[in-house]
Image (tube, rainbow, N blue to C red):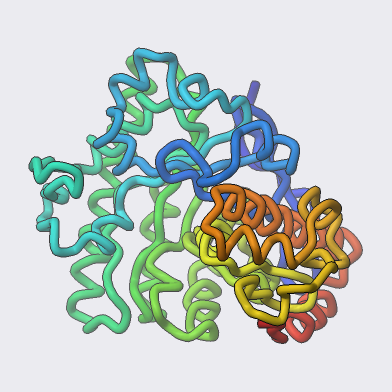
Length: 378
């Protein structure tokens, strides 16, 4: 099977309808990717994910490297077989942990020296090592190691992180190609990650440097880390304007439901975020009428489903009153049902976005969506 990206249609707004072909099936884009950090989406068995229509999952290189270990997963047949998932899988590089676990790591030109959050042991994660781990895992899409920094950042720090990210991408690309020469062409698609903090010229520089390395796809990283939504969009647009039209574009770590159409209009094909699953565990349900905080007393005798416009199994069967009871009682079923609903909501939203692109009216759809979801039923 020939892997790669097929661009099917471009909307007047700039949004793209496409398909990523992987060794484990095709992925319709634009796509939202549920996060399965430790080879599991918290609260949802793989059969449920398949029934929901998930085509692509994300797993975390850093966490799987530490536990249970990439060599163990390789010996057991790779990540797909290990977790019994037959569809496409994306693995990040561990770069975000460089940012989020700052007290436990030191960054230099060689890579990232970090202490395990599990047992305090020291490990050196290099661009080559991150690539090697992901090849052992056998993911369909693999990210290069990058340096994500805080926002706002001084320009000097952003320039240094960009320089390092570019050099790491070059090393990771060379390692990947060397592996392919020695082992036959790999079906894995390797993506580079655009950095540059909130400086437009640095974003453009990063994008151009990565394009010159001819990656199978390109991600925009280091955003949605505290900056305003408008600035996220501005920096994303600076990058996507320079990225090749025949490769998929991935905005990492986003986002709120009302923002997704904005990113798609900027030419983004892929997005991921822990928000639907994390919010579910805290009793926050996303609905067509805004957020429902299910713990609130107003739902104690509410016999309606979480979302009367939702076709998911949870809304077809359970009331808000029951979901509130489960949450307040601390029952394990609570995060399971809440997560099922939220993931369905995100996937259904992306399906409607793809329909709007096909019809050529995403701008109108996005405006109506923002107005509709800005409300909160808390």
